[in-house]
Amino acid sequence: MSLNDLLVQLDASEASNARLEAALALARAFEAHLSALCLVVEPYVPAVVGVNLPAEVLAQQREQAEAAAAALLDRAVARAARDGITLERRQETVMVDRLADALARQARHVDMAIVGQPDPERSGVDDTLMVEAAFMASGRPALVIPYIGARTMPPERAICGWDGSREAARALNDALPLLKRAREVSLLIIDPERLAGRVGQLPGADIAAHLARHGVDVTVKTVVSGGLDPGDVLLSTAADEAADLLVMGGYGHSRLRELILGGTTAHILKHMTVPVLFSH
Image 1 (tube, helix red, strand yellow):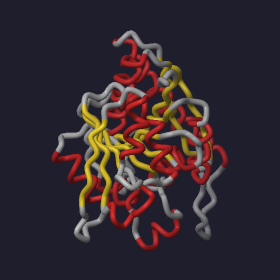
Image 2: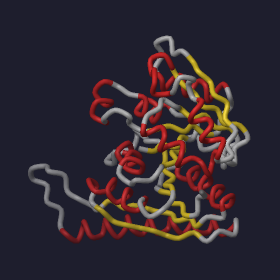
Image 3: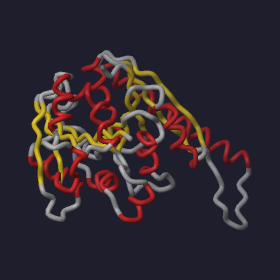
Image 4: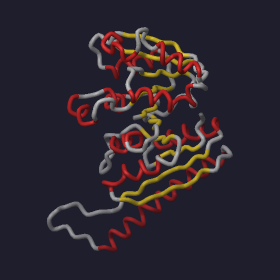
């Protein structure tokens, strides 16, 4: 297994540069094809009584937005060329409510999409829906890069959350190319007594043996949450071990349930300080 085809989503934010650098590092390490995607929001008139913008004004706004996206991709292509990497350009103009669908469609045609941590400060675009689409609607994993960027890519130290679920199994399999290159891989099981048979009679032993057959040397660690949010346990462990990557399944419960009651995926997306590979 390898990462031969990668996609990085770029935008006008400062954090976009960090995503590009992480994507370039992976492309170099895996000798992978790399595409850069820039999505442009189709100009629209909000549903406000009395507002009626001429069609030519909307056309001009669209032209300006597309030109800005093209310039952004020009800069990304030039940056990649300095590393000897040929970057494929992808640009689409879509309605704001179709952005997530467009990203998911693009992500289906690569091995992994590289996206950014949702930014609550951005207006007009729900970044969380975009990130979720990259791994929930694509059938592919997504590597989410935090605002601050990635310390080391490919990662040297990885923490894998394991609860015996389908989503966690998918995430571990999708992460194999990265885990096989890492120097240290820890399998973290939170509250194994609560998980009972889902993680085996000897918690983590079965999945650790499977990973070992793929050349991944895993250290199994169990921890009692003590009532802490599992997301906080994962992030604090990653910080304590100076991890470069966190691997986990996304939305083991329904997304609606997690949004209403709170959940690990949403918590990680909000508070992450280390790149996270999500799969569903």
